[in-house]
Image (cartoon, rainbow, N blue to C red; front, side, top):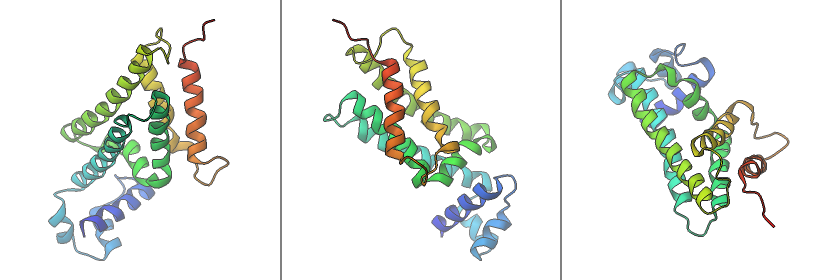
Length: 191
């Protein structure tokens, strides 16, 4: 039942927004009582927190798998991370939109937990970019933090504009984004 509550809430939060969705709306959608809701969650905000943590923890887990793959080059890892972020719009579009749009409804305590995990994702990506700078694959005259935020900004904003049924697939969009980003960060060829 916990998973059903989460699934119904994601759909309602995405359609109506967190503020406009009541616990009564959630239980009505499932045909259960408020007691059932409160058995699994103390509040609507705790439910939102659960949705946020599941989303970011899933990204962190996949990022770790990519980063630890010693068979991949830095460029391949960067592509895989950007692809993962864009692919989540197709696979978990509602959850992605809720993550970015409804974060403002978390209390400071809950928001801090999400921010810590979000920052961890950013630091791991920045370490990858710094590695590319050290090996000479990427330009050394750029700020690693600005390069990281540029990659994340481009990929994370895709939840607004990427359409899985659009002209390009998520893989094609990721490839083009990484090409644009990498070519802009690539070290110049010396002769």
